[in-house]
Image 1: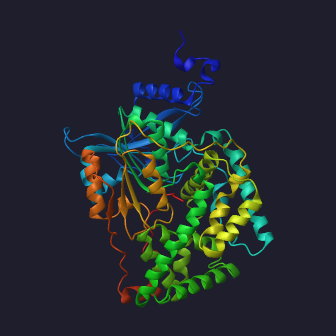
Image 2 (image 1 turned 90 degrees about the vertical axis):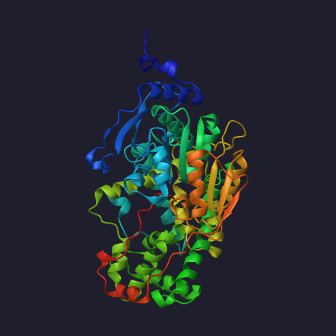
Image 3 (image 1 turned 135 degrees about the horizontal axis):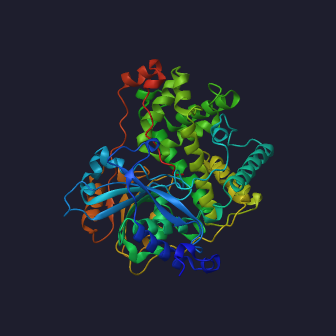
Length: 530
């Protein structure tokens, strides 16, 4: 009798994906994970362990080609009686790696001390990411090469040049990663997540997803509602079918402008420290002057308008970037040009980091293009983004060019699934700040309506992305309580904001003009969320 691995192709084709994932999960449960010390070049020290989980490339062909999904873990720190299983994490993207999650234990992050007593912390590289059959669309050194063209077009010729680059990028994805592209969908990653659950020996999933990881969580809850034990989704993508993904990116443009304005107001309030401008209009004028100078003559030969947008958008993303971005800008205005160059320009010699950046962008593009059918009419793209740019100029055109490869995508594009679970799903905890730029608040409301029994925690008058990583006792205690006991509040909760970033004293800020660039405050390592 033939073993499943030896089954003929005719037996493995045409199987419903729901059956394919059951077969893959059963195999994984039987095989388990061979945990070992992580490869030295992965950068994860003991006691973190690494391993692999085999999943089908195509779940309709469960006995066909497989790919290996990289996973890592650190064991729970409490007693055997306190242990409640594994907590799996996805940081977003699409294209982000969750492999750093166990580091929250090794670094003794105070927000996760209680949870780590009860759970093994498990991270993974989603399909196509990092060590999990990584995909690529362009040579990494070409991808990071700067300066790039100004995203804000001045003419039809500028737009046509960007259209050409987007089509070439889509072609590069097909040429370099064609076999993977049709399978780079969020539902397939959710199926991989269920196989990982089985390989861990877990009957039900404990999951924390941030940003895109919330959409992955919503899709998982839809496909496998009875497999969920605890689920937190933090900074939520609107899962409406009509929103995935073209409209989602247009919505980001509006929200980013709002949070950019918040940062400028804060900089203006702290003008005694930063000396950039004492009103939002003055701060914006300084930014426009900087953009114009960089366009006419890239700063240090490396930093043009595109690179400036990539740097400054971290401030609308994360409050933790407010101070370092303002300090770097202040230092530049005080005469320290090198501070700006060092903060923004890539290290062309760091081939590993450059490959990671290119891979993250490739996965972002591949998943969003594969998940949904995108508009193919350039007239629609041009009309929509030209109109948005008039009121929301900060990110609109940059975001459009990033997503335009999906208009000429050379692989299958799916129809997004209808996210929602009415039965069999335990309470899901939804956490969202009101003024989040990357995932506007409406997304949390939509997810809340779709997941029966869920509870929404709103962080009022705040806008940082990734709320569960911030110090806010009103939220932190509820996250702990939910993960440790499964209990949620009887109704939705509104919490006050976490602490606003504190600007340094004026004397310290003034000294930045004379500070060696290598000693400037560094931005925190940002996930690949978009």
